[in-house]
Every structure is written in structure tokens, then in C-alpha cells.
Length: 364
Image (tube, rainbow, N blue to C red; front, side, top):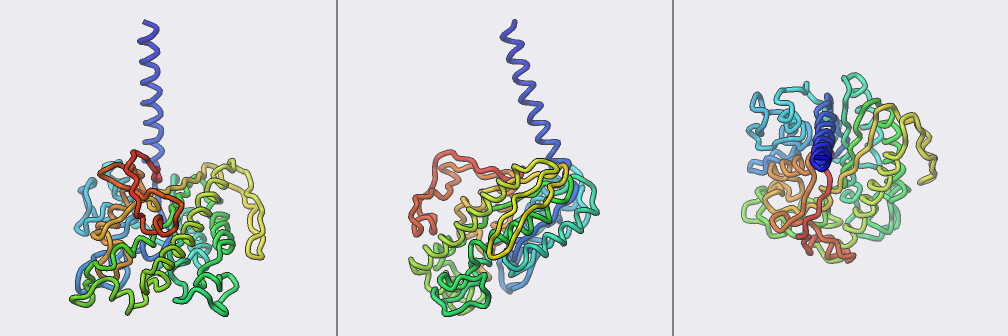
């Protein structure tokens, strides 16, 4: 009898924990995002004639085209994070959702401004709220063709690494943006690791739909798309790209954990980075931080890459991002992930597949 009672209480505890998580998830009433062209759905339609422009109706987070069919995607076939939450509610809960991401945005020059815009919007919305951060790709890809440069356009750029954003400068600007977001009460601040863009070089021979009869390598070489990586996809470029963006990912993970540990009403640590003092902000009541490695560990395929520029996610890629950002990523033989070996070329190409059942959390 006592054993049965114990089992009953254990089951009730588990069910209660699950219901608490579900209720917290369903309390989200407003969402915004700090990001780049990925979060604007750039070229996601992946068909000729190419838009060569933002296509927000395809973006992974705020697209909301499902009408009254709350548990299916709209005609663009992207079941966004917003739509997935509406499916959980079984009702249309979100008003027209702004998207403060911007094509070309970098952590270095744009996150702080985006964070301020997000704060203005979310403070006017009912709690609970969510602010997603998905940046770093352009800090890597906006660099120069040559690795060593006599001078870069800013002291925040590394002349010994393709004039990419220096790691100290990247962390400084990340912290500045978090200092703003942490002051929004009752807000889930969801930080995503960047996509492992060095995987692009796995798809040099994928046909592009800009110039008939040519492949992605032809397009990259002629359109100057992330040229520091794709100009020839040499082993050196792949390894350098991976090493740089992994350093950004490591910063995002470490700093997000640091801010997550701050109690309500507590203050952030003051640090000096890139010649500037950052920190000391007060964390608002009910605000939390969560970090996800799902996009970093995901091994994307050719169909998930837009044929219009061979760089941005297609509709299939945007849909997959929405899925793993919300629910996380579980590696398995049918869902291989990147298995890191410590070798930047191997890991940059995601050449070793993780087949063991390993899970990486999403935002919920």
C-alpha cells in the first residue's frame, strides 16, 4: 500500500512539473528578436525568380500566416515558433509581431540598438514576454578576403583574422545588449548559438537558381557571399571560419549562463572589454535567461539551403530552425548532429556525425 502511494505521489509530482513547464510556456504573450537576415527570412522562398530580399513571412520565429489552422504552417510551409506556440494555445494569441532583426546585422554594431527597440516594444506588451537573440553570423562573414590586413576599418576588427569582429569586442557588445534586455520585467531572454556556417562548404556543388547551369561555388565566387570562407572553401578558410564562430558561440554560452545566475534585483558583474567598462545593471523581477546549442549542433542538408544565394536557410531550413529552437534537438541515427573532435577542419565541416542519443535544449 505504501509502495503504491509512493508511486502515485511520484507520478503526480512529474505531471505537476510538466504542467508548470507547459503553463510557463503558454504564458508567453509577446515575442521579439534581435538577429540578422536569417531571422528576416532572406531568400527563403528558394526559387526563381529569386527575391534577393527579406521575406519575413518565411522567418523561423515571428512568421504568423497559419490563419485558423493553428497546428499547421501557412502556404510558405514554415511552421514558425510563434505558430507553434499558438498551436499549444489552440488560438491566435499574438498580435502583429514586430521583428527587430535586420539583414546584415552584427553583434558588434547592431545588437545594442536592436535590444533598445525590443525593450520599447516589450515593455508595452502584457507579460509574459520573450526576447530571442540570434546573432554572430555577420561578425564572421563580413570580413575581408585576405586573412592578414595592414589595417581594418575599426579597432574592434582583427587585422590578423580577415578583419572579423574581435572576441573581446563581440563579448562587450553582447553584454551591452543583455544589460538592456535584463531590465524588462517578466521576460524570457533566449540566446541561440549561431549556425555553424562553415558547413556551407559541404554544398559547393549544389545547383543555384540565380544563374542556370551553375553551382553554389560559382555563385559564391562571383557574388562575394561570405568570401572569407567561400571564395575557394580551402581547408584554411573552413578551419579559420569555424574557429572564429566557435569562439563567438563559446562567449554566448558562457555569458548567458552568467546572467542566468543573477537573482531578481541582483546586479551584473562589471567588466572591462575592448577598452570599455560594461555591467552593473539590475535584473528585473521575473526575467530569466536560457541558452540553446541546438542550431550550433545541427547538421543541415542541401535542401535546407536556399538555392538563391546558397547561404541563407530555405523554407525547409527556416522550418527546421523553428522546430529545434522551440523543442530542442535530439541526435540519433535518423537525426545526425555534429560530433566535435577538436579538429577545426573536421568540426567546421561537421564531418563526424553524432549518432548517439544526445539532446540539446531549445527555448522551451
